[in-house]
Length: 222
Image (cartoon, rainbow, N blue to C red):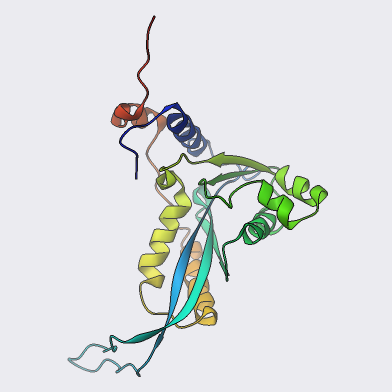
């Protein structure tokens, strides 16, 4: 949601992210977006009646809650690549380990990873210092160029778009436990990666200055 009134901080952060999205693809400096979502795990309390000719599958309306799981979305929009990591929680420690995996596993050959994410309280460089020794935390940070979406501007993070696709194509149904969730998400990930599915981002800084003109601060001339 865009706030009804904006300020220079909002506009500055928005234009910063939009500038990043206009950069040409560079495998040595990949643009990677990170976001996360929670999935409620739900067990059936009665056996599902399978579909038959002239009759759809029938599921009882009653269900049993079976906890929750967190999904970290790591998306590289220009390459049509994404990875989903399922965790029990979404703490600073979990986030720090995701960053280390991005640096050491997903993009070990990159010189710098250009990281776009929102302002969630766990999405801070300090999280690395809570998870690792100072030298290790600094090593990881030195490989990252971090850009934050503005407050109320998480729609600028393309990983959020990927999470919406994941929800519609894979998670919009009852999933009973973490093991099955991991299997289903991995199958979705492989299918979308093999198809090199990309986000067709077309909103530019020039568009923002025209379409979102009302959000820009008024310049006071002396």
